[in-house]
Image (cartoon, rainbow, N blue to C red; front, side, top):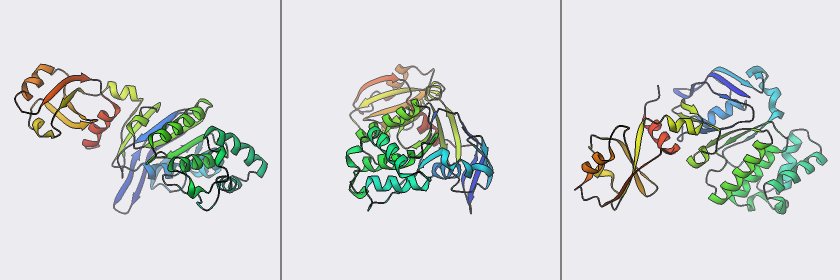
Amino acid sequence: MIETTDLTKVFGALTAVDQVSIKIERGEIFGLVGPDGAGKTTLMRMLCNLITPTSGQIKLLDMDGKDARKAVESYGYMPQRFSLYGDLTVMENINFFGAMYNLDRRTIQSRADEILEMTNLIKFKTRLADNLSGGMKQKLALTCALVSRPGMLILDEPTYGVDPESRKDFWRVLYNLNREGMTILVSTAYMDEAELCQKVAFMDRGKIAAVDTPGSIKRRFPYKVLEIKAETRDLGFLNGLDLVRDAYFYGGKFHVLVDKDTPQAAVLAKIAGMNAGVVQVREVPPSIEDVFVLLAEKEVV
């Protein structure tokens, strides 16, 4: 569906995207995860033909980069920030974007009702976009991206800043669309959303550091993860321990990375007597966030 080869974008002295090669299969939900400034938005804009690559190739919908403009009606793009018209109603926004795809009013109306039912916006057709909640605005943006019935959907952090319940609703819609055969490329700042993707790529400093299914990425994690519950919230008591490869605060507890052959008892012996108020130590499977914390700390080569 989408394939890039050594895709690169340079802005002056900054290499925003650096020789990225990825392949997204038809019917896949592909997640792109990375810190701010990693190059995710620039990569997506190149895939949408909004930015010209400095070098490299894009194959999109079986077309090369020179013919990518011909594919504009075959995919939908939802940018990172809400970009619709606040002084237009929900339906007026949909009509406007549908007209940009040369759809007639009857077709737009039919498709809009179907999508608005799916996104639970049908009751708000006459509400001004400025008067929608954050989650409803994102659903409206999704509706406008879907009105052309694209075979592929490209979403740039669509749930950023949206409340948890609205995020769940949004992902239910994405899963319904995927079950109907739609290919989805989505960037996200949320690790729980990365787990929902069928394949995920971690991007850092313009490069792809890892790409695979979430399960495969976690199985290849090189360390044992110990979860430590303690009275202290200061990581200082773990600093300098030769057994500890990394440690960080995670959901009210500490995650401590040690070599896989390190006995848990050895770690307990090291932290005993440190007055840290350790309540519990147990081994847990690595989460996708553990993987990405480790990758973000490494120099990408």
